[in-house]
Structures are given as structure tokens and as C-alpha cells.
Length: 214
Ligand code: AP5
Image 1 (cartoon, rainbow, N blue to C red):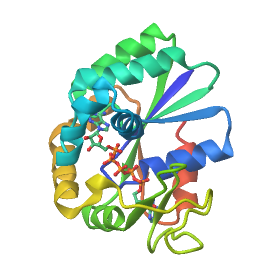
Image 2: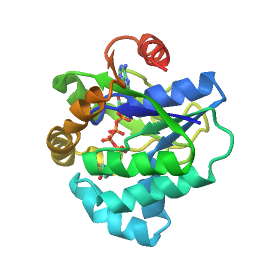
Image 3: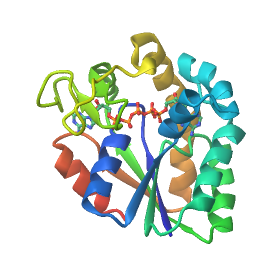
């Protein structure tokens, strides 16, 4: 199994790009650390209960907590040709833990795709995001609107604003990205696996640019 990491600021389009890549190629599997954590919070697992307060503040959850969730999931995965990791790792310590998990699974890291998006666009994307809690589909009120306002195209569910998309928490998430995740760019650049992808413009073009990197 090849591992492809999707790296980028909050709102850079990691989940959107991963969703479209997987829809076009069933040999890919998308794992989002944010979705894993939101699911754990919903189910009130021990990890979810511990993570919830960090997520509400827009801070990163402890490295060991999220690294364990991802490692458990990767150990159970059977079949995908490529695993798209969205939102993990987010610190150098997490990247080192992921190296060990990749080795334990007999997998290999093939690319780290950095979605490059200017800050003012990130703020607009986060403010307009709507998600379907029932099936996980994502929309944007103006950029990617559903056919019927407030209703998911895929399953008919009622769309919601994500809890951490309020302006104050979103601002903190962007600051945390700069402080704790940006150092990963240099970390992976030094290994020769970093691929920069312009994350603005028509989504199909961004998806195609990302696909060509691995
Ligand atoms: P997480 O869920 O990973 O959130 P994030 O990194 O902040 O990323 P987002 O989901 O906000 O953005 P995205 O890049 O996926 O963008 P999207 O495709 O939705 O993490 C949430 C929290 O969990 C963290 O704050 C932390 O507490 C915790 N956590 C998660 N992982 C962790 C880890 N490894 N370690 C520690 N803690 C962790 O797009 C955004 C919007 O833009 C959407 O509305 C979309 O429709 C729109 N859009 C996308 N692409 C385009 C385009 N090309 N043009 C126009 N609009 C677009």
C-alpha cells in the first residue's frame, strides 16, 4: 500500500480533493483524522471525550492520541492500493510516529501533497462550509452549493455548520497550522517527497494536479 499525505491549512480543500479522487478511483481509500476524531466524539469513546475540548478550541489533540487512532485503522486496512491521509500528520512528532506505523504495515510513503491556498481564501472557504452529518458530504454556500439550499444532494440530509467553523475557533486553527504544521513542509521537502499543488481555481483542475503527483 502506498501512503499519500494531503497537507494544507484548514479550508485548503484536503477533504474535497480526497473525496473526488476516491470517487474516481476505487483503489484509493480516504482517511481524515478530523473525521476520525469527530466520530469518536459523537460515539463518546475515551479518545473522543479527551479530544473534544481541544477541538472546540481549535487546538491540536495530543500527538499520541491521534497517532494511535490512525495506527489502529491502518493495521486493519485491507486492499487499498493507495491510502490518502488527510489531516495527519500535523506535527513533526506525528510524522515520526507515522513513519513507524508505515513500516509496521509494510507500506511506503509515496508523496506529500501540499495544497497551497492564500489566507484570505481560506477564511472565506471555512466561513461558507456546510457539511452533511448523515453522509459526510461537504459543500460551500457559494463555491459548491447544493442543488436545494440547506439539503444534501447525496442523501437529502439537512446541512450544518461544523462546530469549529465559527470565526474565533477558525482563526485559532489557522494560527495553530502556522505554528505547528508548517514545519512539516521543510521536514518532507528534505526527504524529497513534497509536491506543491496550487489549491485555487476550478476543483477539477486542482484534483487533476493532485492526482498527477502520485
Ligand atoms: P480537520 O477536520 O482535519 O480540519 P482542518 O485541517 O482544519 O481542515 P478542514 O476540514 O477545515 O479543511 P479541508 O482542507 O479538508 O477543506 P475542505 O475540503 O473541507 O481537523 C479538525 C480538528 O481536529 C483540528 O482543529 C484538531 O483539533 C483535530 N485534529 C485533526 N487532525 C489532527 C491531528 N493530526 N493532530 C491533532 N489534532 C487533529 O474545504 C473547505 C471549504 O472550501 C468547503 O466548504 C469546500 O466546499 C470549499 N472548497 C474546497 N475546495 C474548493 C475550491 N477549489 N474552490 C472553492 N471552494 C472550495
